[in-house]
Length: 108
Image (cartoon, rainbow, N blue to C red):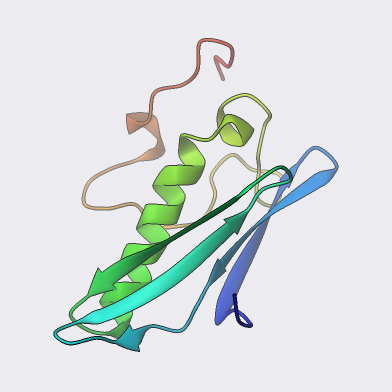
């Protein structure tokens, strides 16, 4: 992945998880924003689409946030941003972090 347009770094204990967003690019009918989440043991790459650059970037951030909220690192290993469980990324529509089921091993 090229140099990210913007990124956010989260902590999982002494390790980091980095979420990197590329600059949205035009397609045939809309814009695409690629992102990559680099976990200590794997990498997740995906994208968001939108009618313009802003909507594509927001969609990518929403997708990344939802994926992180369901990850083992968040559910069971205490992934945080600035010492908080609130990760400071948008979620689609009226969703909140409470809408994502917690693992039975993590009742925070």
